[in-house]
Amino acid sequence: MNKQNIVAIDNHSQYGGDMIRAEKIFKDFLVTRGLRYTQARRKILKEVFSLQNHFEADDIVQKLRSKGEKVSIASVYRTIPLLIDAGIIIKNPCEHMNARLEPVFGQQHHDHLICVKCKKIIEFRDNKIEQRQKKVAQQHGFEMEEHRLVIRGYCGDCQQLNENKSEQP
Amino acid sequence: MNKQNIVAIDNHSQYGGDMIRAEKIFKDFLVTRGLRYTQARRKILKEVFSLQNHFEADDIVQKLRSKGEKVSIASVYRTIPLLIDAGIIIKNPCEHMNARLEPVFGQQHHDHLICVKCKKIIEFRDNKIEQRQKKVAQQHGFEMEEHRLVIRGYCGDCQQLNENKSEQP
DNA sequence: ATGAATGCAAACTATTTGCATATAA
DNA sequence: TTATATGCAAATAGTTTGCATTCAT
Image 1 (cartoon, chains in turn yellow, red, orange, purple):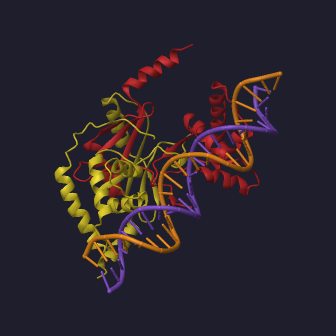
Image 2 (tube, rainbow over the protein chains, first blue to last red):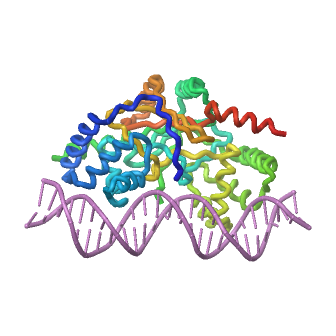
């Protein structure tokens, strides 16, 4: 449920070559962490590439089922963070209710920097980005209602911790 | 749970005057729709303003409980979409797993325009926004991992439908 | 008076977890 | 061989809904 029409403006590459490279990257990623490239993970990775568009965890299970293959939903959920860490998929902002809410009445619009490590949220506003967003909306014939920009990364403090960590032998 | 540190860079106004104006706006909004400004809705609105920061549905119930007042979680969930429609709160992109996922390996980064009416998703890329985001991250000492921009609004098709609708007597 | 809103509890959906078994290296 | 991963089913969390009752107008 909650299926959405997807209109891809950019051409999607066929994923054939990408799949092969991604498989290598994922394997290396796993090995580096002392983890294993298993049947289930292989199937899930393949499905991610066959799906080519936005998808949810259960889509993987359904798609595999329709091909007579199967992987448990638990394994899908356990694999998703690995694929994210390996840089193969990302999470997109979602329209679900369990989003965080924020009062905006009487407030100037602002966007967010979120530290992926300590979860600190920093609010910012950049007028050039604001302007540019208006332009993009216009270009696509959109009447903009609102826009949300999130930059995720490591804040100053957590970068240092990270560097320390990777310096460990 | 899943509490996050909030660092507000912008000064938040005290919400006192905003609360009063918001109350009027919310009331008008409800009346226009033939809905009622009830005790529960008043309490929820007041809590939204006392919370001043990002919050989740259950925070409202808890905060009220700690003051000896109460509203059911069901009413909170039923009121949230009204507050959103009235322009008093917004949903922020969330970090929860039930986000939509997207393969990005071998893909150029892109952002999304989403039609709030027909849910159509249009992907776009704007280099000026990309550059500017890098700059913002730098300014705040962030090491950017990724960024997501969503512009929500009415696509060309749905604007027309909307206009027609508001023309009805 | 009466249509709309509430609270409660049950239902649903998405996600996570414990554990016995299977499997990659 | 053995630590890691899997599938299952049970548990948890977040959200929605039906219904009898209460409330706003």
